[in-house]
Length: 455
Image: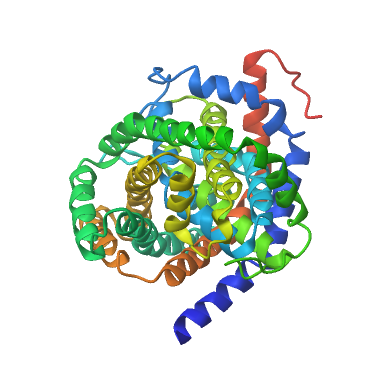
């Protein structure tokens, strides 16, 4: 208990004003610098994503641009979309949803910038022929050797985070299955680890192939179920939106099983859960994007920008709205059981609980696969390719261990690691903004639709 209290204190401080100010400042700076490119070119980004699903790419790389997007999306569509959102609402109140939306809208340009840098500074491994890219590459190559230490620090944090991160997903799956089928957690953890190991053996191509087929379908099924509930409880929607906006800026008193929340709690939990879900600003998504076959860094950045929209503004919003319109958010439940309870309330028979259980299993499974690839790249950067196999075993074991960890400790550790990844990455984005600007202008010129002036 003492350790959890210390960890929560550290997490609360990191996700207090320091990270909130830095995240907001970077997002506003990039938005102004790029004339709100994330909004003016959003339609173009969606066209590049869904209009080129079957496009194999026009440059060097290991996988197609859409596969790279799905791999990164697989790492974001996970327990955070189902259990994380419910944790934010159950603890921070309805106002947390507003701040989750805010961090997503700010995250568009942040995700665009980090993907552009990841593609611009990616390298091909002379021994394996695979492509590598991400924060530690664009810091080393973009800022020079004197900043190499920052890349090493980030890689160490990422490597550690990706060992413990599966615990979040495994814990969410255990809770969902325990509620639905009353299966012991350790059994779920073992089965989950074995199934995961099967795909991990194939590396990025196996992971991307799985993600390309499963991620769009599971997201669509979850959204359809959510829409059905929202239509059923349509009369409650105006009141729910009123609560979201009101309690984003005012404290909320205790009601039912809800203990009450301050504005700072709503902000911290909304931002933390939003960033955990869409990973904008953490520097992890460029690792998957760097493997894409494309000759234009900005093209992949536009495709990747839609991840944040799909993950947070669509899937996370569905979870939050379903929990609020059904009125179960004051039940005293938390995590996956709360989301499951909301779907059971909104859908007939056992369909609701089944959708959440299957959804969280697939979401968590795809996320763990995506994270395993991120962790491998960090370990390979630090210790070489020989360390990949031992790392995979450590990763698989952590899934089993995570099944029995306490919910509070799991989410607190994730928040700490995410914060420690975000700080150096956001600083790096500011310092390398001129590179992103140059790449963007070059792309716009290639379209022959935009003037070449810096403006």
